[in-house]
Amino acid sequence: MLKGELYIANDPELRRIFLTCKELVRKYNKTITEAERTAILKQLLGNCDDSAYMEPPIYFDYGINTSIGKEFYSNTNLVILDVARVMIGDDVMLGPNVAIYTAGHPLDKELRRQKYEYGKEVKIGNDVWIGGNVVINPGVTIGDNVVIGSGSVVTKDIPSNVVAAGNPCRIIKHLTSKEKSEKDYLVQI
Image (tube, rainbow, N blue to C red):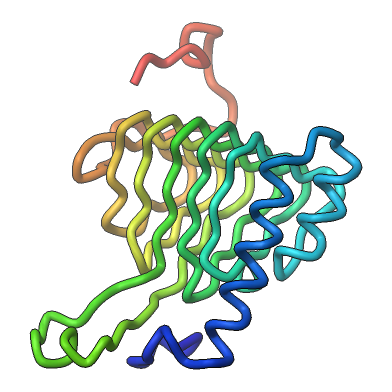
């Protein structure tokens, strides 16, 4: 599964991991204190820093296939379908209703009827801001210092140092190392 090859999701070992994830997600979504939430995230995810914060509710398929860097924040309703690896860098912020998908299904109807699936990993660099209601599709890499505008559907890789938005998501602006005025920081996308 993690190699991107076809697999069947109701394999007993995968089912066990999936159900463990569901129990941890349920606990997280009902927990109030940050200390308890941090402890649950440490159990749920493959890797995460103590500074990670996710506003409930959250949803993961497996959890253990997701790694999150330092100073991560997500607003409410984060969905990560992590049948393949999801690697998120440091200082990443996600708006509400962000969905990160690694799961895919074959085009061939016979393979779909046999319940085969596959996954393609998603990578998100450092210093990334992703607006609300963004969908990130399987196999996408987003570089460092990127802003993805609200409502975007990211279907292809996004390079570093850009503002990108739309459906499909495309580059709107290249960012320089130092923006020239405050107006540049308040880009409406």
